Image (cartoon, rainbow, N blue to C red; front, top):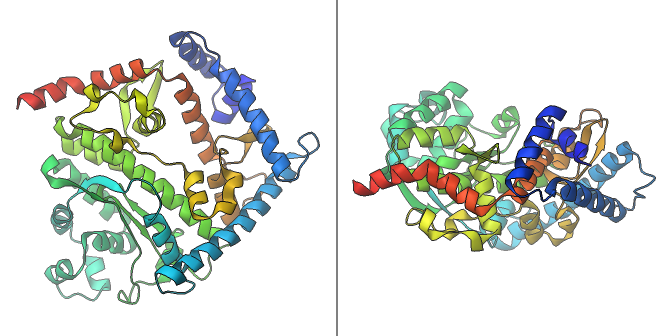
Length: 413
């Protein structure tokens, strides 16, 4: 059964056995890997039955096609729901993006973040002036552009107009940031007004090949209008990407907030923007991302020890929200996808993922069965495996080992 996990995670046999032995021996040999494999097998068979398929007589390609059909049918439902939300609440009938933004803002989840102040971001952008953007937007001077555009709008426009090196150079400047450049505020979820930005239209979005921009350091998600040539299924796919972006912002926020008294704070911010924040110490021989730590405490909040995290972090900072649960909160008819993020069937050591993120991307990119992707499933499975082996005492010790010496120094200052 555990060969299934090794193949799913893309780990060779030797590495897998070493990892498994470390996890098992550090936790009293609970055989969580076997239990997880059995659970995935049973739950996947149940999902096949929900699709009207016979688990004992369904080929892998038939399952893949059935998932695509189910997803596209559910995307139509979600699209109608978002159009109705827009018509009833935003007074823009049929504007699915405005419906999406309204739905995201009104989800019953955490909307706070620890982010760079708007004024601090404008100062950083002034040091790295987006001259192409200024010209494209029709401004005669940088001062005029900074006066009339918000920090989030400036970032959005620059990321659409400037080359990739501009963004890289801007992020490099984050190494000079201080905790005083940050503040706690509501997450920004918005679109852009292309009627005002006449020189930047939906053709730019088509070139970028996605319509969701995520700025973790600003606590902002920007959803651009869908191009006319958008493929089927793109509405729900955009919503999925936006929901993942919101979780990324929460993870970035809590990690940077915890590290605000560490030396080289700006370097930590810069690295956290470009990489998944990770504990430097191993837990049972495995490096652990802060994303996983956040998921652990959001699910097992009774293990949150204030003595370890406060006053820098409170329990509410450790929020993480299920993508599938959030989708169902917007459109209840998508309940098939609940509890399926780490479910899959294997074919020639390659997964047929039931994770709606993978199904959405396979659908939007028109991927054949042979070229299917399963990256969302792989990450979810890895997190699920490690979460089952987590020992909160080991986790607390790892956090303390990483942060406590510098926290003590910071408190003396």
